[in-house]
Length: 558
Image 1 (cartoon, one colour):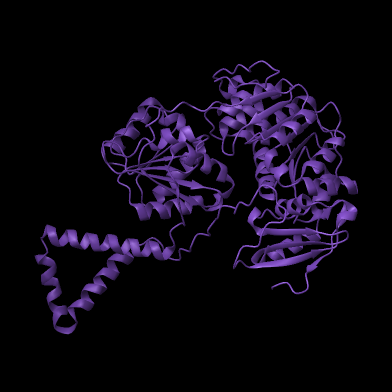
Image 2 (cartoon, rainbow, N blue to C red):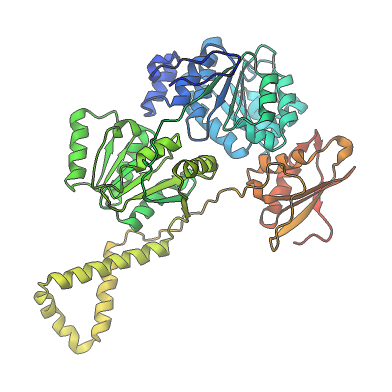
């Protein structure tokens, strides 16, 4: 793999390295291996050596490719080798609250071996609590642009010791109107800092920004694996949108509904594989773990069980599943989406062979919408987005299975002893009531959902046009209008308002409608169901350095 460089720099040669060969500090390598990561992803192999060498980097990588570790591990390495101060040594800027929390948690996890402290700073959360945490001292700040500027303006955030800056999902931040905020943050950082910019796309506006803020950068863009035309399998492809904390329960529910004869479930790490195999085993599935931590003898034994029908599920990492060939797989499940559409094609190609019907199931998080679109583009097939089955759906499915067992028992015969046992009941009870009671007893005996609740639904953000100005009201949709006491006289632009709402609340783009700005006042249409949350978030943030008075617009639908 050799990522192409920009036109004015030579290509970056990248070897097939493992984590022990990337040059990372020993405590970081140990932590990564203890977490169960078996090998670096392509973007990690390409980016980590560049960042460890102190070079600026332009990384083109989509969500799900492992880019968080690609920038987190080098900045933690620098923190470990260069020393610390009371002020943050690294600043990671992200577009949304959700991503800020996720990245901060990842940095904290990767940095446990060196005692690194990371703090997520975003709107909609207590400013005072964040300020006190900053005062106590943190190593890495992961922030949305607006809230970082608020802290900078009030003196609760100092950036004079920052050595590493990361702009993650930079194209999204430009779309949300954060360019000037980012420039203001970078102006407060020492001029000799190292910068990494990551983006899924590279539009012309971002090219201009990259030229202005990156110094002699190396560009890494992982080349996709080559998959021959016609290799995309024709299988039923289903996506369930579910947040990470509900994934395990959702997978168990889906497997109960699907009843696979043999399934291969892909996870990202060894720890996930072991944990999921144990969890599914406790629910009655014959699940086996398969990862690089097993000996060859153990791995062969796992595959023999699957081929021989002694197990239902194999939970595996991509590394362990290489070269795995099982003709009778009915289902392939992406518990974690793969890093690329090409890898997705390879995974799901393991089912639906020899003319048999196969099913490919993916559990995706809303933030992975870009990868889902890329998969659809690569396969040329639509992905069916379906809700996670409800508890009622599961009960209905289990009853279908019970009825199937009853039919099979009737066809098999051998019921005479049971007919004899029924004789006393015939004289005192209706035979249909007896049959219904027997079904009920059998269903309750098999049910494992006592007290089981529905799993919260997740939805892809509704995407609107790239430029969030003057968007038309959708016919019949429930919009309300908010009045904000800021306008053109203080330099407010549509992107400021759009970015403040979406970035500080973590809500999808589709909650924002038409935006109108006058000299002193701005009006924003928002989704009625989210209006209260938006108002609360705006009251706790600043726009163009000003606290905002927000109220319902007179005459607005409520």
